[in-house]
Image 1 (cartoon, rainbow, N blue to C red):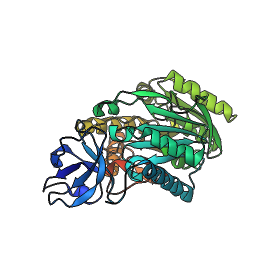
Image 2: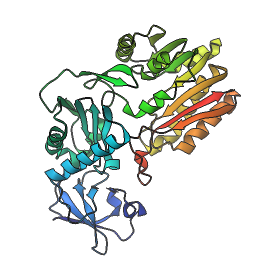
Image 3: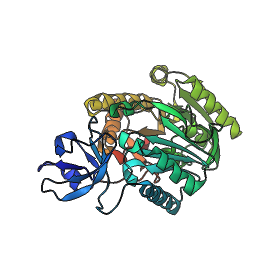
Image 4: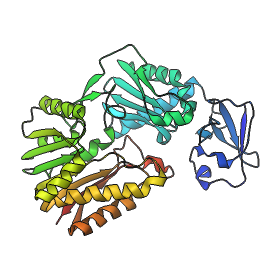
Length: 389
């Protein structure tokens, strides 16, 4: 097998199990290695470290798939890994709708598979995993006999790997508006045109955390997308819920989701939430509960300070709209903003708003997105409920 040899000084991250190997950690790479091929990775002392896929043009030229010298990377390997990921989800109670494969946390670097009932959406975000797409689909077919498989590779990160953005069917065509049930509520997942793979499965458990704080409350939800938090709040007994999102298409889907659940105590507006929060705080409007679920403010470490400023500003505006004793429900979905940084931002916003906070709930993502403590990119979602005094 072709080989990659690492330098004497490499990050302890690799020794402790992280699968990513950066270009500045590589001493020698077999000249005949082609992008997408599997190589053995050796330490400076030529001792075996693992096997992984290679892409010399990538910022991360090697991503490990196994540390077992005797394990072959082939069709059976992907079947075993996906089957193991499914067994884990079944054990923890995530079966109907779940993230079936969460990349590095399931030992399949840069592979995402989401399961919506009998339909599957996959993302292959690095060239070395993309070349195994046929074998991955065959494993899904063998384990699940699915009604359909769809590819959502319309993401810019693929271009860093020298790949094009694309999306489409990896099975016979099917209706890409897929109905699901979450926490007893009905939603439509648009796997062709929705954000990411069509639905944010990682907030499933966090949406349940609204149950007690929204009873009889006037609730405002900003960046509502297709209304999942807002619909949960309405279902859990809110007096009235208003959801905001800049996307007309998302708001139309949110309204359809509300109708599916026969909810009349909820409405949605297609409006710029940043501007609305600022204007309404000036007007003195207030709600019992304000929910903020903004998009990621940064994808790179260079822009972390801008992200922190953005999260502080949006939470400051939110707090100003909350009645004394009401609740702020807020999230951050970038791993580059750590939990400590996020909580510090919330505290800074509270000081500027001259409000005192009492923590009610702090969660990360649902357990079908498992966190590996040595893989920082798996620990990305921060979800916080605080009482604003």
